[in-house]
Image (tube, rainbow, N blue to C red; front, side, top):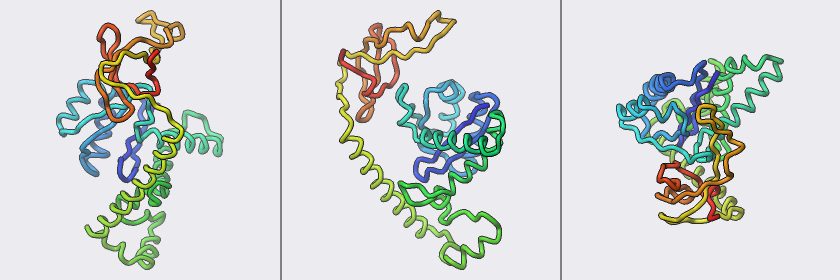
Length: 258
């Protein structure tokens, strides 16, 4: 079983789906029916380098809806917003299985409930739940809560444009403040080397074992020679190897001068 996790970059609203097979077709169907048709077409999709996101069919899906596609750096999943949600999902699934003394194969049964709870929980970065940011009010746990919610906050009866604009402005400000605080904390500890286009460098060699290619990952050299061909953002670079073959995007932490 596989889980596909999609997250809205602004509200942090999470969409999940379990699959028996992680195929491009399943991925496209999920994004189209559960995200695009029900909510909106995104301007940009950020993904890892999974084969589902690098296939011809997925590229055609992006072209159909005129969606830009960005991939994360190789072996640097931190740049993908869904990774934080993945950690929470794993922890919650593990807890549910332990509390109920269930088999590991039953994890997918808990995915909808856990996803709902994640979307209903306030975030430390915005102080609002993803559901609130998306709908202008908190989620009602039971049907009779609607009366309580409206009696306590009559203005939530109408999520008009002006009110939603104020909510989104507040969330943007809180997210920006949280981001700056996290960046300052990171910058005080991090010592990231900067590179220029054309620099000759070395990059960590993480090629996986392959019986087809007759490669044993543990016997590969620790690093391989490369050249910087493009600078992406502050700490991500595109590289080619000594034979001018593309090596993809790499974070500066995996690049060294010797």
